[in-house]
Amino acid sequence: MSAHTLAICRRSAMQQGRGCRMSAIRSSHSHSHSHDEGSSHSHTHTHTHTQTARVQEPPPKSLDSPSTSSAPESDRSRLSISRAQQYCASMLESSFMSPNLITPFIPGPSRDAHIALSSLSAALKHASHPPLTSSATISMASGSSAASARLRLQFWKQTIQDIFAGKTPPSEPVAILLTEAIRTHSYTRGFFTRMVDARTTRVGDPPFANISALADYGEAAYSSMLYLLGESMPSSRAVAAEHVCSHIGRAMGVVEVLSDFPGMIERRGRVLLPVDVMVRHAVREEDVLRRIDVRDSEIRRKLADAVFEVATHANDQLITARTMFEEVVSRQGGRRNIDDAMFAPVLFAVPIRVWLEKLEKFDFDLFSPKLRVKDWILPWKMYWAYRSRKI
Image (tube, rainbow, N blue to C red):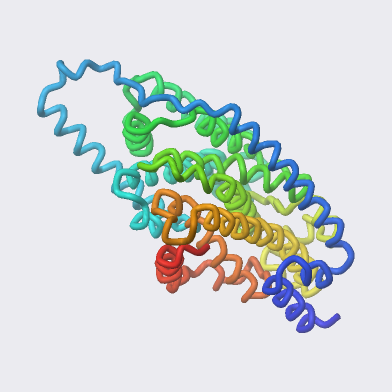
C-alpha cells in the first residue's frame, strides 16, 4: 500500500467512525478493538467504585481564629490570592488542554475552583517529570530525577491533607488558590488522592503495557479532575454528566502522551506508546531514538500506523462521551435544559477533539512542527460548542 493510499485510509477511518476504522487498519486492529471493549468494561467497574467511595467533605474550617485576624492581614490575603490567580492563569497558557479558554464558560462562583483544579493538574504533571537538561545527562540523572519527582508529589499529597485539615497552606500560588477552593466547596478527597497517585505511578516513565492501561491512567489523572470540577458547580446537576466526563478524561490521558511524544524523546529518551501497539506495528524504540526527526520513511510509516491506532482509541472515547451526552440531553428534555453547571466539565472534550483533528490533518505525524502551533479557531469552536450544547 502506498503512503498516499495509507494516508487516505487513515483519514477516512477517523472521519467515519468505528466500523470503517476496523477495516482500515488491517486485521491487527481487531485485536486492539477487543482491548477497547475490555477497557470499557474495566471503566464501568472503576466508575462504580468511585461512586460508592464518594464522600463529599464539608469545607474545612481554618485553624486560624478569624477574631484575631486584623484588616491589614485580610488585605494581604486578598492580594496573595489575586497574585496566585494571575500566576496560575499564566501557567495554564501553555497547556494543550486550553483550560483558560474554558474559564469564561464556567459559572462565576466556580471559576476560581476551575483555575485551581486545572493548575493542580498541571503542577502534578510537572512534578512527576522534572526537566532534564540534555539527552547526554538522561541516563545519569534518571535516578535523581525520579527521587526528586517523588518528593514533589509527596509535597502535594501532604499539602492537600493539610488543607483539608484546616491548616495554613504553604506560600505557593497553586496551593493558595487550591486552599480557597477547598474551603469554599464540598469535595470528595479521594479524587485528589487519585490525581496524585496517578502521577506517582508515572515517575520514572514506565511503559504502558497496552492502550487500556494508558486510558486508565487518563481516567485517574483527568477524569478525577473533571469530577472535582463538577463538585465545584453551584448546581448538583453536574453529576448527571459524570459518566461523560469519565470518557473525556480517558481521552485526555491518551492525548497527553501523544502530544508529549517528541519532547519525551528529545529531553528524556523515552518512547511511551503502549508496548502492545509498538509490537503490533513493528516499531522499535531504539530506531525512533536514533532518528529523533524520524527521517527514515519505513520507520515513519510504522510510527504513523502506531500513532493512528492510539489516536483512534482516544477518538473512540470521545465518540462514547458524545453518545452518552446525547442520552443526558434526552433525559433532561432537550438542550435548553442543559445548564452551564452541567455542561462546563464536558467542554474539555472540545480541545481534545480539535487536537485529534489536527493530528489527522498532518497524517498522524507527531513530529510535525505545525502540530505544536496553537489553533486560532479553537476559541470560536469552544464558543460554538457552548452555545449549541454539543461536544
